[in-house]
Image 1 (cartoon, rainbow, N blue to C red):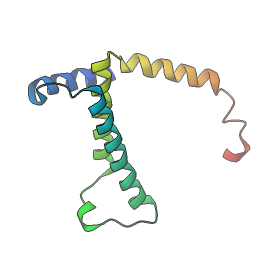
Image 2: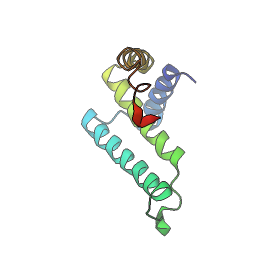
Image 3: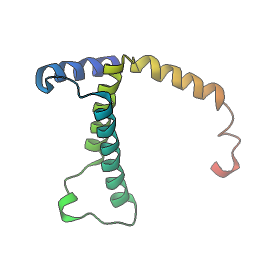
Image 4: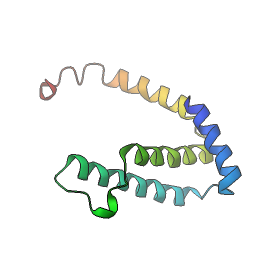
Length: 108
């Protein structure tokens, strides 16, 4: 599946089941909430905290896909082509960081 396919699939889902997109501010709040849920799973799985009994059902892949869904909603409602944006972002990072990480002694 391409990012364009994902954007189209989310749009179709919203129109069929979601009635309409939440406004951009609501979706930004939802995105923040979903990132927090991912942070909780990572803190418990890889950090020093343990899972509470009520948190056992959380999974990394589910939380990541929740983030992707809301991010795609925001892209759709603001007219951002995520494939184009990602391609441009990789080009920017490649030009800017061509040797930055390779030359970083902390990474060796």
